Image 1 (cartoon, rainbow, N blue to C red):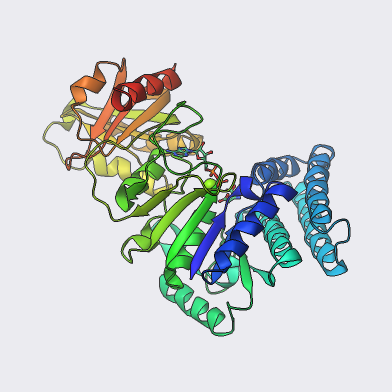
Image 2 (image 1 turned 90 degrees about the vertical axis):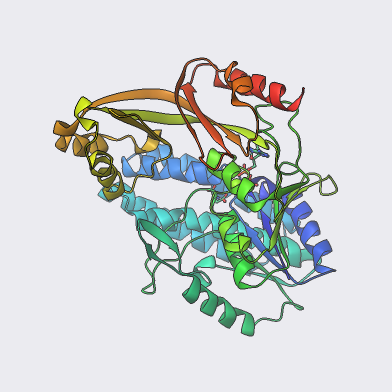
Length: 444
Ligand code: ADP
Ligand code: ASP
Ligand code: MG
């Protein structure tokens, strides 16, 4: 059995949904298929914008936005069934839209948006795209029905965040499969996250449908997982930044995990872990060009640099105190503040009298500064904003060759294991820098 996951651009229009359905039906000729879909591209961003407007009591601004995405879905649905959608289907769409409007009215009245309500709002639209895809599959070709990942995947609190509870999810999924005949039906599943055993809702990270696909692939013991998107596969850099990146035919699981962590949007950082130990291959393919060469992610230890990625939204905090020499507990005091606020630290560099760490801009908040203020007697704090992280992934190159082209490095870190080098530079001109580095490494 195979899992096929389609991202936002693959379900963006009637034409794309039909292409998606054709890929699914072609794959079904050879194997049983389960489909995972994301919301149409841009919709999750618009919904987040709507949530913010609703919270700030701006009905007049969020209703037109809501109307426009509602129209878009209804239009695509009508186009898929030649303006003859069956009543069940239009009722389903309307049902979700009415519920959503009610929630948003409450949000704007109360001027409050809990994580639980936000989860519901985003989830409704993922349901709609799964409805559209199952409609397109069943329309012309094959019986298909949409299901909710909340009924299949259970999460529990793990250390600092909610994550998949493998045992409960495996049980749920085994139960689900017992009652399904995959010869006769193609299930289409939404990205989402149902919460604990009591049914509380938790939403997974942005881009999380990749992770849902590999989790389902693991529990269903899929032969492979195909991630269909808008590029041919994984490349040496983001093709939106570098003009002619190299497409990798085969990449090792660990390298891909590093790509994702470095900011390569093509995969969510958690995508690899469910399948790596089970050695289930992930294949990345292009919905716009299904016959193009693709990337296979599997066990493949390779030796040469595979990618460069940048992440512009970084802040560096430096903690400085001459009394640090030879003393114990400085770093742990600071790290405790970060873990109590559930902020993930990225790179850390230390000297005898200071240490610096990087974090994402979104985590650099008033609350963090307040908490750090409380332990201020330990150190003097310096902050560098507008920092770009450049990750050189899986490198066995001579750093001196590379560093000659990089000005104003404010921090750097390298695995002792020696495979990746991370540089932090001022954000000015970071795109040009990555283009120069890419040329130097890959187009000698
Ligand atoms: P989807 O909506 O299908 O999930 P995403 O937008 O999340 O698609 O991911 C695909 C995008 O990832 C591509 O359009 C591309 O710009 C970007 N990307 C970033 N880094 C890479 C890389 N190394 N290789 C391929 N694509 C990359
Ligand atoms: N639609 C969701 C998002 O934009 C999930 C996904 O695309 O994977 O984050
Ligand atoms: Mg994605």
